[in-house]
Image (cartoon, rainbow, N blue to C red; front, side, top):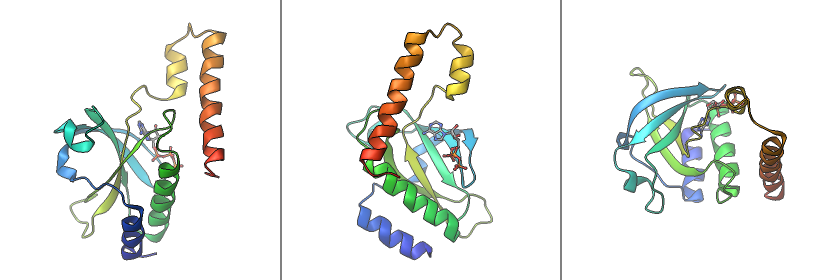
Length: 156
Ligand SMILES: Nc1ncnc2c1ncn2[C@@H]1O[C@H](COP(=O)(O)OP(=O)(O)OP(=O)(O)O)[C@@H](O)[C@H]1O
């Protein structure tokens, strides 16, 4: 899969594109096999989406432009779009592009996502020792709802 064919598919999906210069104050949050995720501030919150009053986003920067990464990127965007309006799942705002290193000739794709700024569930539970059974049940219910929604949206 070439960058060109990905670009063609993305065009058909009608995705919002943002200028990378709109973001500042990057802080690494975590990394997976294909991407590194940063917390970033928006220079002008109104630019990201007129309906959203957000100052921060998560930027998921793909490490490479190779075939495997591009396939993952496309799959992730298609899945995100299927569940984007569901409030218990991270929102997908759109795409931007940047150079991962100064030696790169090509720009890498970056997903612009809602920032989940409460950290991981593991850390949350460790820091909230007074979390009772009712709270745990409520949390489990939200997770089950989100998974159920993904299944009904055919995100398997
Ligand atoms: N929208 C987000 N808001 C806050 N933190 C996030 C967000 N997306 C990802 N992260 C953090 O960044 C880490 C890396 O995310 P990423 O999606 O790249 O990989 P993964 O899904 O955890 O792993 P892999 O892609 O290897 O299966 C996550 O484990 C999570 O801690």
